[in-house]
Image 1 (tube, rainbow, N blue to C red):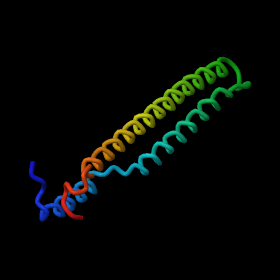
Image 2 (cartoon, rainbow, N blue to C red):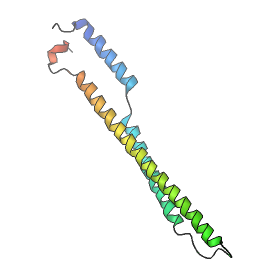
Image 3 (cartoon, one colour):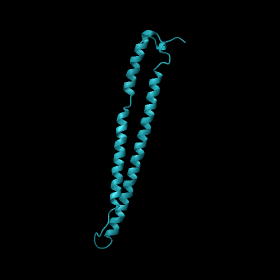
Image 4 (cartoon, rainbow, N blue to C red):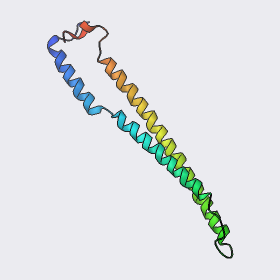
Length: 121
């Protein structure tokens, strides 16, 4: 199989660099977003835990039990939100790992096993 003509090698390299720049996923940005999501999830869990501390004498009648029921519903909803945020962070991490693997494979596909294969540099 004939090699790539030497005059086209630099053009191919330029096109590959341009395509990579347009399609590149900024992995450090994704990593920072994962950290932000995890921190937010921790804050949400802390808020849910704080609702567990609702109590005391709020007044006559069913006010105490109503407030306790409402706090429990909110705590449950907030806890669920925290779990969903964690799943979102895990999904972003999985996508980031996939992008990194793809970028590595793409980079390796443009790196010849035989340095003479692509002509002089």
